Amino acid sequence: MAFVWKRLLGTIPSLIGVVVLTFFISHALPGDPAAYFAGPAANAASIENIRATLGLDRPLPVQFVRYIGDLAQGNLGRSLTTGQPVLTDLLERLPASLELSSFALLFAIIIAIPMGVWAATRINGGVDHACRALVTVSAAFPTFFVGLLFVYIFYFLLGWAPQPLGRLNEIAYSPPPHFTGAYTIDALIAGDWPVLRASLAQLILPAISLGLFALAPIARITRAAMLEALGSDFIRTARASGLPVRKILMTYAFRNVLLPVSSVLGMVFSFLLGSNVLIEQVFGWQGVGAYAVSAVIASDYAAVQGFVLMMAVLYVLLNLAVDIFATLVDPRVRFEG
Amino acid sequence: MSVVTLARNTGYAFGENRLTLVAAIILALLALCAIFGPYIAPYDPLVTSATTKLARPSALHPFGTDALGRDILSRVIVATRLDLGMAVSAVALSFVVGLALGALAGYFGGWTDRIIGRAMDTIMAFPLFVLAMGIVVALGNSVANIIIATMIINLPFYCRFARAEVNVRRELGYIEAARMGGNGALRVLLNHIVPNILPPMMVQASLNMGWAILNAAGLSFIGLGVRPPTPEWGIMVSEGASYIISGEWWAFMFPGAALVLAVFSFNMLGDGLRDLLDPRKRV
Image (cartoon, rainbow over all chains, first blue to last red; front, side):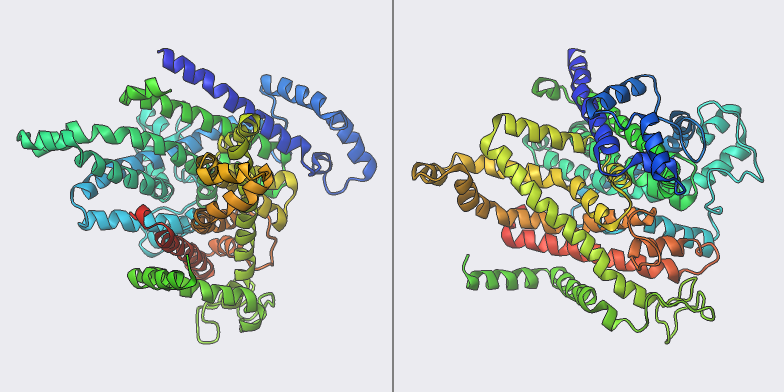
């Protein structure tokens, strides 16, 4: 438990760093937020006026204190396009993004770990080659391009997937009663099977195209860690003692895979949160990423900054969760920390 | 390494791994497109035509035409310069800045190290693509700012790499000797340490190129930096995306394939270079 507290305290510098850098990006860089807020029709006087109301004419330290005060009250400013507070907008759309990312991660883990284990037990076998090909492909393909390819193949050519226009075909179905905000889970809670089916059908393609890219690093690291474990003395001893292969693989070797996998998860999350933006754009998924993209196009300054801050905080928290998970699976980490 | 050994090793790396050779050839072709693009392209990439909207690939237009009747092959060729240019400049910038910061942090340690290290940790505390979006929006929507943003999100990798390499070498005998000989810190760094860490850094850079291309293209895919009608692979994919559901696949497929080809070649070349310089790291 002491370690968990220590690790919790350890996130504070990261959070401070995130807030300072976000402030720096939004206030100290040469771009002029006052000009953005004033809109294209503004003249010098109205821009000056807005600058004063936003407090942008004050010295940077004063602005920083004000920024921290606003953050403490959950005030991320008001979106130009929706007219609502940015935080409200983001929280409204966050469940959709989390739903997509979680399914992608789930898909990746379910496929990648058995694949990596299999590849390590049969080097240069079929699965091993598939594993290697997947790593190469995922390093060379842009996520958005893979998403579009899937739409072309599975929607247009094969007709297996529904039209890639968001989370639910709202003409045919009405969204389930709001509970978590994730349509699949809400439909499950409401026991509304047709809606569950329909929302899963919408979710599969984006989740797989996002998950494929998380799959490759996890499979690669599982394979490497498994190979290392299988080559070690205690496995040799276990084999010599005549233990069943299944027990050797699952009980003895596999445990050593969990730590490397949890350490690669940090990178996977960074990737997932970033690529979410692109995939949501491709599939018309109404999450925070699509919101940020429309904010980018409309030069909706506060909305983009709020989005960046929220993703960074989320990322710091996810890394924290991964670290705590690592200490649970491998007690050695506690002593190193 | 003498020139003869280098040539022999290069021959070995290419002979051993055909993919590296293929990658080098593709990259040479892409470089030709980047340099002579506007002269090679069969059509003007910006000229629209109302009569040939969304024409299928044919002998006249091998890659078809887009929604405004522009020849996609020409646009893909002309875009090479911008796409590779953005990635090369971003990687070059992060290489130089990261090397400088990392070398200072690794050589001097103490507060220099702590401040630089903390700054890099802060960059790494963001999902990198999201940070790049935020930077481009704050700096203003332009190609130069895409390069700066891509440079910043790449910076920590180079900085940490250089720091670790310098740190190892700082206490070595020949560096002690150089210091004893009365060389100042800057001179020791520039003349004795940096030349030794350049080769591994170069491998890092070539492995990193593909990622830089993907990032820059991703940013322009969501409408940052490059403005239409400028030909650029990411924005062309995004323009072509609207016609997928009606089956006009060529408008997004060819610029996307160009992206994949470029990134793939850089990755393969990076792997080949790594094998050449450090055969032990082979996997």
